[in-house]
Length: 367
Image (cartoon, rainbow, N blue to C red; front, top):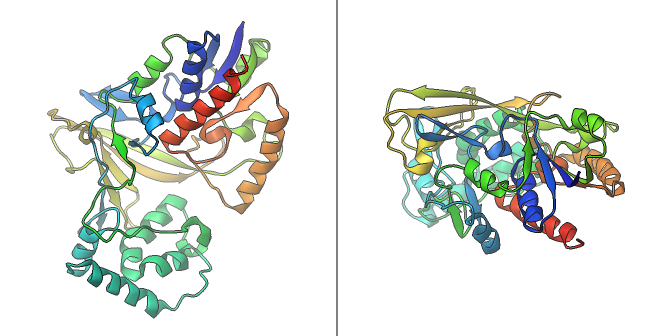
């Protein structure tokens, strides 16, 4: 009935489906959720576009990708400038001269560099054995204790001293007064949210929601010639080698009867004793002036089968395990694996678009 069955109506699946439909290729896209968009889905609450599965800020230095997504939406000039709360102290992120000035009462880059170098020298860490030592060797004690340690331990659910050093290969220190979190040339939020982008991409594609792939193909095994699978690769193969590990996120979202709760879209809470990692105030992504506001507290959580997988745990064990599944994937000539779960890789949105475009070009170029 179809040339392609696309499993997952997130960004990767939607881009591939759009490119296929543009060539007259017949596709069916299915998703187990009741909506399209995957994790970039936004829903309108009190006139505010709420990022239901966490903050998504589009940023890229890939002009071709930037031009591509601008076909489907107009982007505003939002710049990601998060702040961090440690006890009763407030700091700018990323680590820059505003951060250092607040932390130490200094004014110049030379003073900041000298302070960090002094702290690193006093530690005398030669070969870091864990994440804690690696971070201390990169940024010294103050930045680590106030802005890295607690946040990282909440993210990973274990002490930094028990995490491998390779997780933090570098920690950028910016010795200028610049609160722009990203270094990319292009950045912004789509006006009206992300969902309309996916709607436009799928305008000429058949879509079936609330549909579990594994049940669906039992009933319709010959539904399509090929499959684009963006679900979990280990689940596709029945966990034959065991389950890959992820970190999950739990959201507590509430509507507040006030105009402005925290004054910024993203506020991180870096002390270990605060149970959530950050609070998102969604209206600030689009400079909203609605009389109410919507906030989401994010709680990092251990992933278990059945929970929503968010971040691959790319340690040595899991990477080795994934390579086994990758080998099986290569043998499936009628199945294309893509996206964050299909390739067990954390992707920024622009990298998802790029990967989907390259996959579509390679695959559809044969037709």
